[in-house]
Image (tube, rainbow, N blue to C red; front, side, top):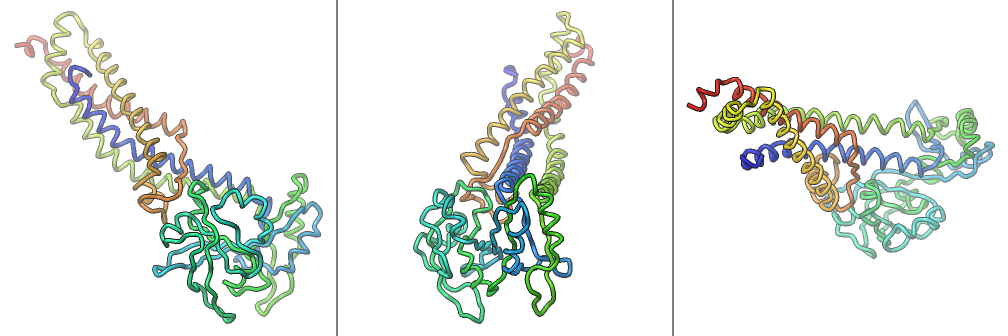
Length: 384
């Protein structure tokens, strides 16, 4: 390696260029999976949704009392979730409406500013990424962004989520349940019910909710039936989404690998004349072909270890202090080239070991091929 520093340096650089995006992408995928599972573990035991014609439908607030009466149910919280558009460019955001008293105990330590006031106050708490894109600060006024028969009102930003919160909070707009009902003009309805139950009675409570039949009173469109989604059901959906993202990443990386392999072959085979002279001198002083190949194999191991270690260190720097600048926008739709929020990542052992193995394969294929050709040549002809 030290006899040919330029060749060794170029080989390491080529392998790092191939491995770095792969390690970074898989680390982001693993980080998203763990963050989603953590959010689900901290969430409610059951999510009760309304179903009409096999599709989700709003839940009447009359159903809260019926769900609370089920044995084992500790608490029921109505929630409103819907997409809104803000600003001149119609920036998409997710509006979440919850009873303010449910956030008073835990939300104050997670915000800059304060929580929205109770009632239809039109006070909002926005995510860090959304605040940066729309240039919003605490106290900023947002012109009416919704239309309904009751009229529109100017909204006030009373808080901003910190950037170190989970990724989903970047485009989140939190408000009171009453304000969300006014925005979507859906009084007396909720998107779903967050249900907390005793662990020992979770399955019984889920079956009892499914047997409720109609939720509340029927409206002009007919009855709304209940559907209970457990935490385990929601967690089962997380791996499929992440695996789809990993599959797309692996497909693109295979194309890079197909281009990088010939490049490494050329790089490690460069200077074949010098390698042939070195091999001829070694064989002239008594080295065998196996000894020469073992020497080349050890050189490949050292180069691959150096390349893999450097790729892992650069990936940690890229995803950590640099906040996945550039790569975050590629793997996460809606995230800027310079993300405001921390992009979740995890340098898992399996991807790192796989990256090290691939680095060894890349370097070994090129170096052993050129070494074998040099060792196969007669020493007398080479030294002549």
